Image (cartoon, rainbow, N blue to C red; front, side, top):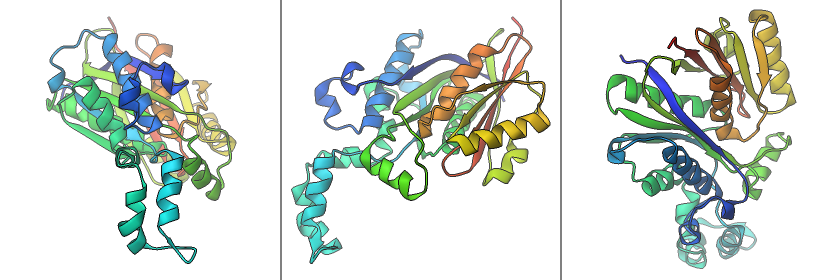
Length: 297
């Protein structure tokens, strides 16, 4: 298996109409898809990659985020005596919604819009993520390059958790910490001297799984916690098992994008011969870990 390195990265946020995605295209996109499309475009503009039809794309994606007015129209026509009716949804609800709403509601289109816009034709996948799922997306991309399925791949995460539907969902789960919309992607290719290599990606179920995914042998630890309680748990684990590591908090709370953003930060922090641990604990309580190492030039 070939060693896989980070060739470049991009992180985007901010107003959607300022990201360079054409207004006509945005009509079909959920906010997260706009962010992902802008991030992939920014990454590729910084890399001298050709043959885009062979580049893979794997993203951790968040919840759907269609236009609220279309949601309201659809739901209003789907009610029978004040109760949701699947029959009315089929006969009247769908007819009341904008046909383009489907492209906004399918969360795999966060990845699809980005890949189509950049004309990427390699192996691909969209994995739902509340944090750890993005680690799995990066792991899939690393495996694709390492095994020779593709020579290059783009991996990361994109999410728009400020969407009212997502805010309501998180509140029902007891998560009321502030969130922000963002996307972050990595360009992956076969390692060259001096590159930052992804050595390991791992996920587990539940906070007790930290010991199964994390690697304490690191000079730098970048943590991506979802809220204060998760940050305390990660800091406590590091204090007990990696006391010599320099800990950098990256409490981005952009859900599916958070671990990718933390990887970008970690790659900038390690010197030759050092290793970095990126450790996340998302809203779902599942830990994820990515180990990076900078090879000698």
